[in-house]
Image (cartoon, rainbow, N blue to C red; front, side, top):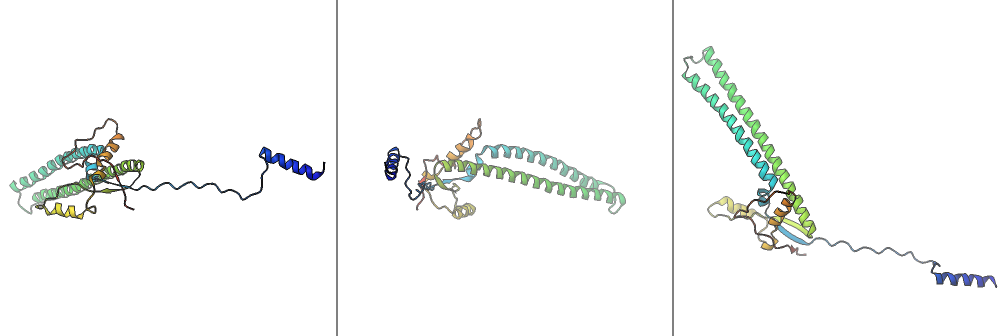
Length: 225
């Protein structure tokens, strides 16, 4: 058999067995379709979420107890200083005498220490309260993130639900200052987020809803595009 016949035979067998690679343009991998962007919007009342948060409730109660205890201590110190002043006024020491001046300086020092300690304590309480608010709000945002991500929600807006009173200008101003003027009540996911928060705290039960608490959510609506 001639050589070119052998080549033809080998090529034919290779094609039949499917092992003959014909040079061609390299096939590009198929591109996966991009994930659909979230397009729903929702509304929550952050003030209600804070009030109903277990961390906020428990730590605020503990802080309230500390404040009351501190107030009792400072009240006693204030009464002690006041008694010293009364005693000095009722004493027989003449103003300008060494003993009178000594007691007067003692009272002045007590007052200065009282004011310094009171301001320092107020600052400590303010920082503690700030930490409580920070931790609470961070936890709320995490709960919203879990809930919204699982439901294709693109944006959650805060809206404070309360009844403005024309006789109270402050409430009217606060209502008009809100950026969200109106929304369909079905967009309100406040109570759903409350449930999401308490799901992370086994054994905890959400407090009873107040009269101004938002209604239970029925879902979310797509964002206008």
